[in-house]
Length: 123
Image (spheres, rainbow, N blue to C red):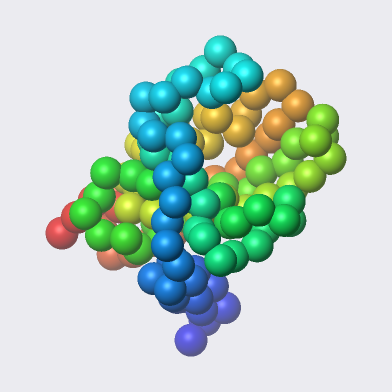
């Protein structure tokens, strides 16, 4: 198994074994910034990220719960960097999530998973 395939397989396993807790539903406003969440945003309970919280997740509209990508995010104001998983996201939804990490002191990079599906859609 290639390194890339192993990464996505283990990410899928982590999501399958964890409860996804949605803290910010799609369409809700950010508590401090003038922005609205384009997708459900939350974390995987029982996991740990660099900020000692759970691993962050953007949840898209696809019916499956496969990890369709990830966002590598850096925030110089907070002095941190994190990996945020994209679960069941189309490519367009992934781009919307990425845009949330391209503001102010933040930068992000989309890591897209080629899944044998056009644009990450259900088949």
